Amino acid sequence: MAVSRLCPPPLPAGVHDSGINVLLTQNCSAVAQGPKDFLYIRINNMATIDISVDEAIEASVFDAVGDITADDIIAAMDRQYVDGTPPNALWDYARADFNRLETSDYRRIAMAAKERAIHRIGGKTAFVTEGALELFAVKLLEANSKVIDLPLNTRFFETHDEAVAWLREDEL
Picture 1 (tube, rainbow, N blue to C red):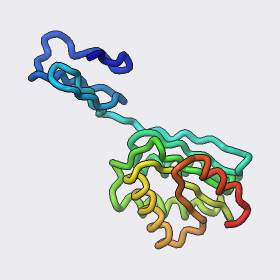
Picture 2 (cartoon, rainbow, N blue to C red; picture 1 turned 60 degrees about the vertical axis):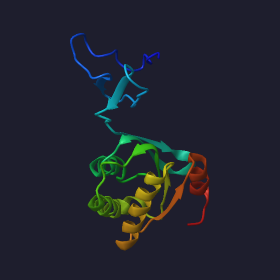
Picture 3 (cartoon, one colour; picture 1 turned 90 degrees about the vertical axis):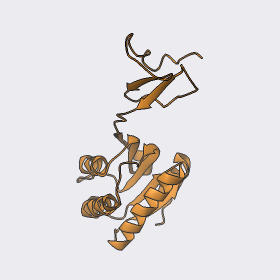
């Protein structure tokens, strides 16, 4: 089996294994085909949330990648939700994981969004998710947002294009 050059080489000589070489590497997908193949384990999937502004839809666009935490999401809000921010937001979680979020984190995120909503009066928030777990996580966030009476309209989409189309609509 050919090992992808995207991942680091096998363990150094002298490192013992039991039929499967294990190489721990940052941001490398898990691959295991059988004895003597290499098992690559992602141990530090650092999250990033890139922020841009799409003037055409009057939205801050948050592109989340990796295993995000509540602190990552709140820090992104702190960077972008200030005076002069666009009223709309598009949170793209298509390449994100929610494995590190705990139940209490969803309320924290919703409360942080409510505190910063003053900067986005009349705005809408679109969430893009692909997997079932991510959709469940974002719906849990929506439930918490309703409980605390978040003054923003939110919707969930499977594609970026669907989210953009909704943000272009005039009606809330």
